[in-house]
Image 1 (cartoon, rainbow, N blue to C red):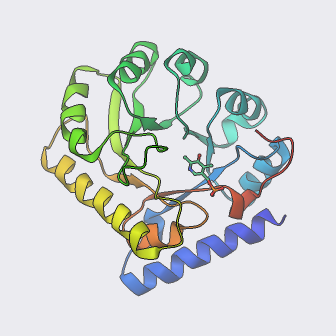
Image 2: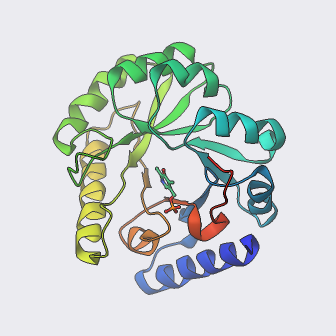
Length: 228
Ligand SMILES: *Cc1c(COP(=O)(O)O)cnc(C)c1O
């Protein structure tokens, strides 16, 4: 597994898309999702120049943070149980999976500084996907105004698991549209400038549709046995 080569390939793909559609490639941050791999592999990503690391379990985050803590910006990307908030809150800079008020309240209670949160939206409506439904997003974000440690930096989604490019593209476009609706509210707690969308299989479409954070596991750091 050549993590550095993979990273260069991904960055060069981003660069080409950006040239074609007129975006600034610096707007697009790559999160190395290290949930399937060892600490060594996560370190290889950092050595290759990756700044952002993402984990979806508190154990995985804590293990890697113990070794690499200061060398990366940490993202929590998985569904988050309320009782686990206290295990991660002092390590992460971003949470990508805010999807209910009870979770927001716990984050706010435990936070020692502003926590940058993405509201996870279930755009595709698949029952297997986490996230709140698109028509509840505005109301939810307004409710969060009372929680002073929560900043809604953006929206996050996972596209349906399919090869159909149009279906994936439609999903990302809907998230972009929703982002504009949130921005139009002009809420102090919700600048909503970021879009967290795109994984190994669909990040190129996500970049075309406005992603600012892409979350890449398999095609960047791979999968190992022994990983979570
Ligand atoms: C695992 C995971 C990813 C990365 O998936 P790959 O297909 O391996 O790139 C991205 N986002 C979330 C929320 C994940 O759980």
